[in-house]
Each structure stands twice: as C-alpha cells, then as structure tokens.
Length: 147
Image (cartoon, rainbow, N blue to C red; front, side, top):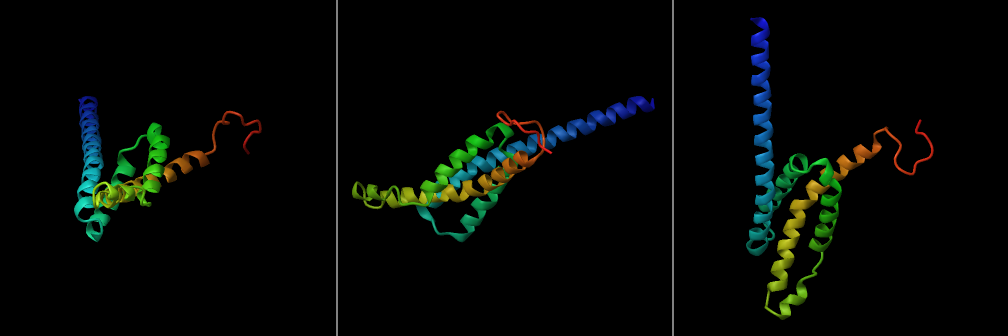
C-alpha cells in the first residue's frame, strides 16, 4: 500500500511541475507579445516615459529567462543585435520628408523595441558564454585536448 501512495504522490508532483512549466511558458509568451505591443504604442505616444521603459526592461528580462530555448539563442542574438543597432540610430528620419513626423515615430517605435529586446539579449549572451565556457567535448576543428 505504501508503494502505491508513493506512486500517486510522484504523479501528483509531476502534474504540479507540468502545470508550473505551462504557466511559465504562457507568462513568457504573453510578455513577448505584450512587450512588442507596448513598444509600438509607447513609441507612438510616450517614447520618453520612464515607467514604460522600466516595464519594457523587466518584460525583456522575463523573455530572456523564460522564452528562448537553447536552439534559439544564436538567431535571437543576431536579430537582437540588428534591432538594437537600428533602434539607436535615426535610420527612418528621411521618412519625415514623405509625411511630417513619420520617420521620428518609427524611430521611436524601433528604439522602444530595442529597449525591450536588449535585456533578453544580455541574458542570452551570458547563457551562450556559460555554455561555451563549460569544459566538454572537443569542438569541430580543435586538434588539442583541453586540460
């Protein structure tokens, strides 16, 4: 009888862990989508709002810790680098000649997206560095053994 109750307890614990994992994955997905929606809205109407910027940084950290898998690290970092670089320039300013203020609004939106993306990129860069620093199998092309 004790064996059967242990098995039931283990099943209950497994179910609880799965529920927590599901909840965290939903929270991460919501943070990811909401971060870009907030970036869009904030970039249009409140590009210099400190509270909005802090919110985007926190949401970016949530995305960085919960939403990016090991296979997605490098593509995410490449996309984040491009977004942060473009977000910190005035690349869309020439559009002001087409519609007054259009280029500035797009610059503000992309800048807010960069603010949201940068914390997640830092988390993933650290994660990639830790993976690279671990001793392990020889990488392709390495001819000397690690000591």
